[in-house]
Image (cartoon, rainbow, N blue to C red; front, side):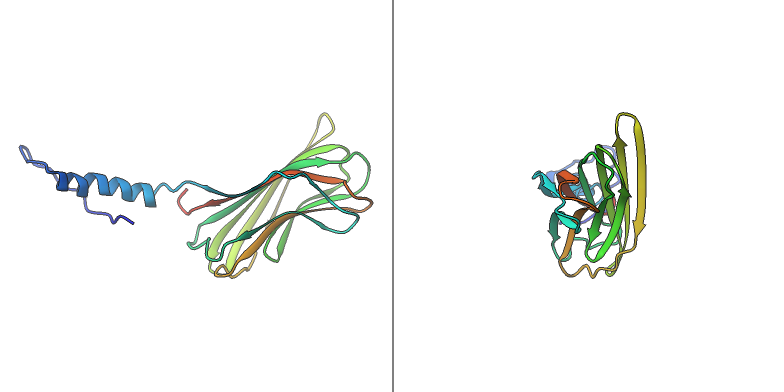
Length: 190
């Protein structure tokens, strides 16, 4: 990791050497790239179609977050999933989990709906987090719903943490279908 050097004040007719340029320009640009503008990293992509099974809550996708990945207050974890709900009047539920904490994206009797769920977990300390879930749904040709919910997980981030999505129906299997799920790590400052 490169360290920051106070920028040099250049003088007229100064002979600029490679060493001076490397210290004051190259190394400082590297420092900025490494520390000020980190980019999100995709940790996991799951493109396997999965359905709820029976009336019990069913894991649709899971990912094991590496111990210590959210190392700095402000680091974020994003989970994004999308899919459909079967036609019919059954009550369907979609949830996002960060460790033991679940946040319900929605519970409704959608009839042939398409959905997307975006969940974000932000580290506030080594043992506390904030979680927000946003879930737009298109039920039929023109009925739009926008759901959001909030949770406060209390996971110890020095250990591995399971993140997942679940689906459930009060009447049958194959009522909640997930087509894709991905997890991103967003370092603080992004």
